[in-house]
Image (tube, rainbow, N blue to C red; front, side):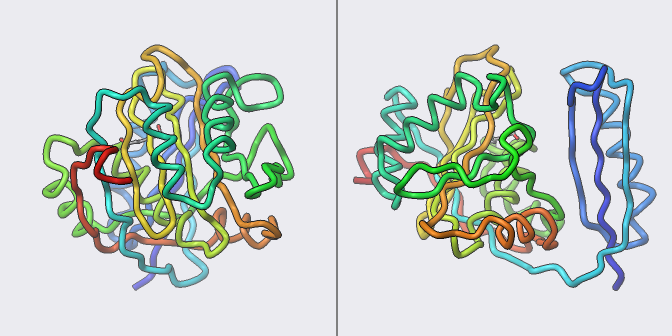
Length: 259
Ligand code: PML
């Protein structure tokens, strides 16, 4: 069955407002184009003066992946302390991880704002390897199947949000690359204060209050193995179609249980 990628982005006076994408069979195209258009027009960040919806036939078969296991971290500890525990489970040195967490909160782009894509950081040197520091790497060509979405909604219950669904799909694609060790994400939406750290071999850890409410800063950092070649990684993240077709689990943990 022929599959199509549908990608939407919107902006106002040149400033990005929203973006979303799907991979769907031909018979779903009209419905999905309309739903992305309506999503673009009703974003909390304002009314766009530019909307692009791009439809293209996939030129290659997608990879079908199982989602990372999701852990909701319940704790009274400040987010930085939670991250220290979680980074200690990963191959990313704790101080390096915390340094980039702080950078996301202060504005990681060269102009002190939000990058459009992710920063890519080599471990353990801390060297940035993305070629364009304003743009970073933007993960694209990804979706979750209707069955996997239903299962995620069932497992997450009240913890389910559209942001979780999209972020879990993205992070599953990112962590599937053999060079990626971890991904840190702080939403740049001022109203969305849940972020996550995904750790290779462990899963996707949701962290509540990862930033103060009202802060319009955030972004993503991909931590990669020493010697990672950026072009093949970029090509996979930006171009290879991926569909998350099943979910693993959703559980609640405390940081104490993890060490
Ligand atoms: C974003 O706004 O793109 C990031 C969303 C992070 C979702 C975190 C979660 O709810 O698990």
